[in-house]
Each structure stands twice: as structure tokens, then as C-alpha cells.
Length: 82
Image (tube, rainbow, N blue to C red):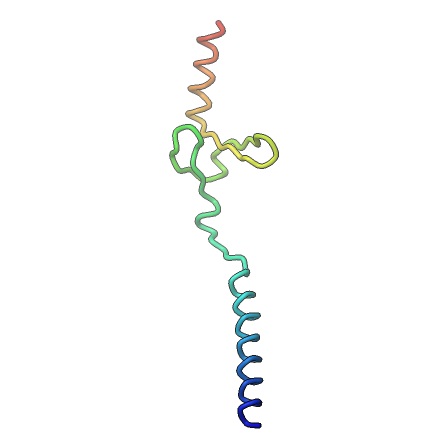
């Protein structure tokens, strides 16, 4: 009888550990310092997201461009088409 009670307590403890562990793992983390920083897609330098231009390609891909890369692309386009 005591073994059965201990087995039930053990199984309930395991179940509680699994449920709470799963909730802990699935909890979204917060990294405010990293979330405000992104790399330029062309020069790969790190900038604040507020300093970058964001473009979406297709349904899911986000592309970031810094001002110097945009200026150099603009200069190349003007030189090519003028």
C-alpha cells in the first residue's frame, strides 16, 4: 500500500515538474538591448533600428539598410543610368 502511494506521489511530482518546466521554457524572454540593434544588410555594420530603413521582401524577410549604403546605391544608380 505504501509503495502505491509513493508511486502516485512520484508520478504527480513528475507531471507537475513537466508542466511547470514546459511553461518556464516557453515563456518569452526579453532582451531590450539586443532588440533595438540590427545589422545593415549590405555593409553588416550594427546600428539602432531607428537609424535603419526597413524593407520587407516577400512575406517574411526583413531587409535593413543604413544611410551610407543607400547613398552609395543611389550614386551607383545615377552613374549607371545617366
